[in-house]
Length: 259
Image (cartoon, rainbow, N blue to C red; front, side):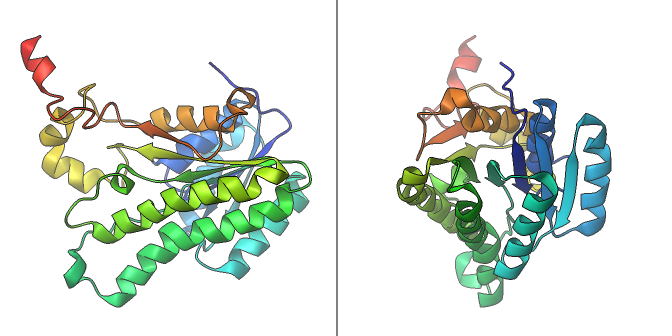
């Protein structure tokens, strides 16, 4: 189903990578009639993404450090001035460093928490200022790691588990302003961020997925579009798992061997 976002303005963080989830989300909203602003720290990649999306509709690109309040505030102010409103905001930015917890330096730990968690706090706080008079939608990226962590990426899992909890609290606190807050839980999605893990463990990963395939950024974008739509108007404080049935049972590979 295609959802109509004509007259709406949508912001997406972590949107510079043209093979990434943020780019796919931005593309989906543009195709559905929205105006979109892309946010990322990588200026050159961000501009390339904007140029590629420009034929689809009105799209702006703003350099934003999601871990700094002053940067977030400036981008939101500029977006409203140039696009007229902020109706939907997708907190998609994230990093996925690999390190055992006790081998991790304090600086890397803080960087993970700042990019993956503090960014959701800062951007959601700013969203309230621009949405509280007319309502809106905030959508946050958690991760399958927020439900089931894995050794070697504990800081990432901890940050995403916190996003999961924060999303539910925000949903309650912003409900009086008609601001809905939901999230999405990607499983193994083929992006630049997951390329290394997929290259080394591809077969093992697929066998743990009921649908026996990896996810695409477009799979995530479709679910995010639904969460932002009027059809989801009674959903807040909830998450959509986009994992192809990853670990829905202990032995998801078994039915394939019986087929």
